[in-house]
Image (cartoon, rainbow, N blue to C red; front, side, top):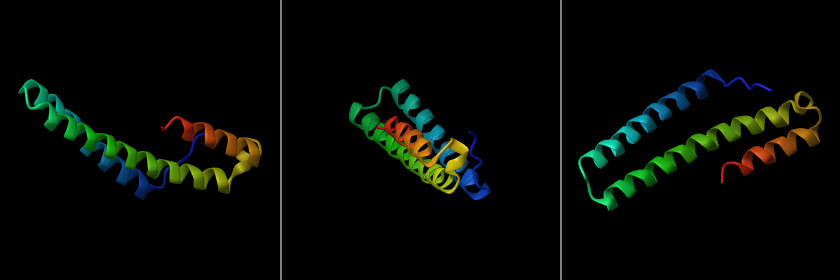
Length: 91
């Protein structure tokens, strides 16, 4: 099932992903410059946190879609099972 993202969420996610891309390019540059491991790890932690926040926004939207339209997933039980399965992939 395809979930359409609201336009404002889509724009928010796109901006966050652009920032994330910049952070990843920054880490690659840090490695090329042979920067201190602690600095690289700090930046990687920031990337992980940013990706997690993006995931949370998508989970919230997904939950609203699942809970608002469970029949599109077959039944409420199937919608919940699919959502739990998806959430399990985030950890």
